Length: 473
Image (cartoon, rainbow, N blue to C red; front, side, top):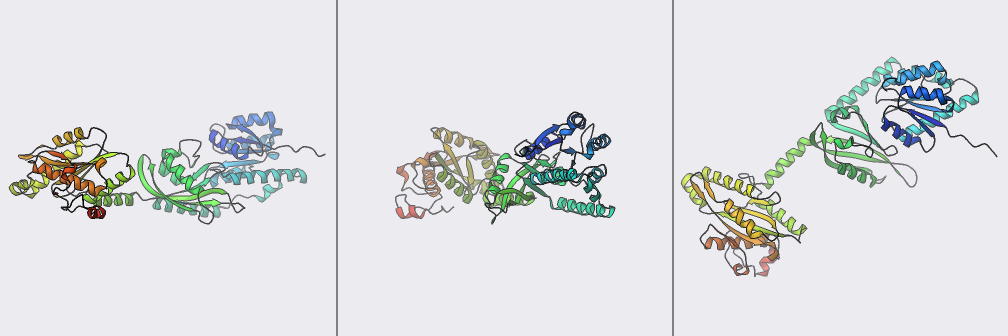
């Protein structure tokens, strides 16, 4: 019966606890893990149990005793001859790679960490070390590793400079997600643009990512990516991010990566975030122009009718009131003081209406001097209407302002916006018939009454109710 095979021990040397945790998660299932949070602690552990360490993952940039100093001490103590060292270097830092190889490192891994690459590199270096013992020679493959030539280094740096330059011009945040280590890698330019201290973040381990994007958006994107298939791996998602405190809208374009095995498994994603903030703002401006009255800034007729129908359909259990408001004797303002004065009166009343309602209420201008109010109520609808009615009365300069109002309630309404509007309009007619400067609620006695703004039709006419025509203003 053969001897039980020993599980190799990996020492992870890094002063960042998060990085040590990620590496331990990646390798912990196959190897014994020993952690050191500084170069000094790593050297002490080597003194105590150097013979038990089979491979070291060594970060270059640590405070106090850095990775190069650890390599130097390992070389002096002879530990480099029997312990393979894989350096952990920063993104695009070929200068770190070259120096580490010159000092005796065997391999390097570029941050942020990719689980598959790390497992492969560790396994290969352990295998080479085992071959060294079998061949009874001292690390022969070191002769095969040479630092890149100056020419190659210059060309590489030129290509990275071009890449970073074009990425900054396009304002594209490019990223890669590695699910094994739960690491989201972005470019150095992207990290600097977003105001982040590092270019690799873990969505489930900390709040660094949520400094720039809402958690709900991250979870939604992950859900969309995992819902793709190898045949249709691409997604598109619009959301806002925070760039150094400023909210900017953009479009995320990503492609899920799937394994080639059967069944295929989700292996992460690559993608980019394209800034579309200016376009988003232009669309918002156009949408506002299309949905709002140009003079008063209130909603226009088409927009408010759509929103009212949407609320009535979405929340049938709620009760609403729709009020049609007409300025009394407004024609005198135009005739006596001119149309510019009349426009100022309309803007004045619109502002008073806007200040009198809640943020959930809808206010619109639906005709020359006619306004509409749509609001939810419970059992205080009369008090609400009374308060708003009195808030609209007063003076604009020397011109007296009073209004007539007709109100219809949704709990008495069998139709949508059109029927509700027509009933409020008939109630408005009754208010004017009573001498203006008052409000009336619709009841069945008004169903055959004339309208002020709507076509003169009867609610009892089933053909008209079926057509549900938009009121003509």
